Image (cartoon, rainbow, N blue to C red; front, side):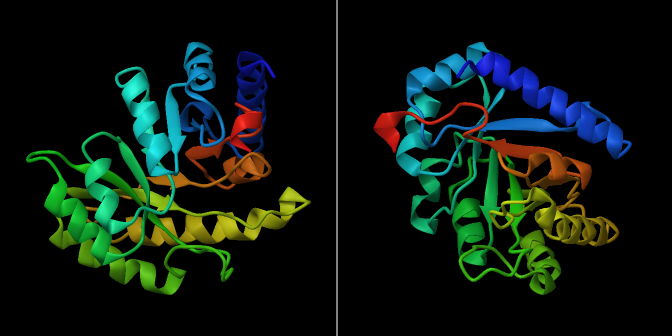
Length: 230
């Protein structure tokens, strides 16, 4: 798999999805999920033009950051244990999985003075028991409580849709997250501008873009998967 060719195809698909939904494709950021690929494969992605790297395991997150600090923006997209937050908050540019006050407290405790951590609040918009995140009905209250943590800036919401054979089946999940984002924006919170939507993966990103995604998280369709990494 040639990453440059894959990236070009993805960018063209994003452009078409934006045309269908009357959006500007420049408003969509591609995050390459490198969980299942090596440092060398990640290097190839950056050289191909990828500017955002996403990791969801602490070990891989630290390895990739040490190799490419300054060459890309880094996103931690997996569940983060509160006790491990100290390892990434001074390194990663975005956290996509803020879903509990204990983690917010640890971020506030560990955040370097004067720095703000750009966070997405994770929402279980599909209602699946296997998914992490807040239920939509408790998200507004949670975000209101985050005003007590000055080091946290809520830049948006994140969700994971069910893995469907027909990507069209994911559309209601993305619509639900966008509506929730819009409701939060109306509150005009200083600490939670909430402009962004992190939603859409390799199998459903075109539908997610049509529904307003501003960050899409792509692994297999962009960088593939190394045999050594499963």
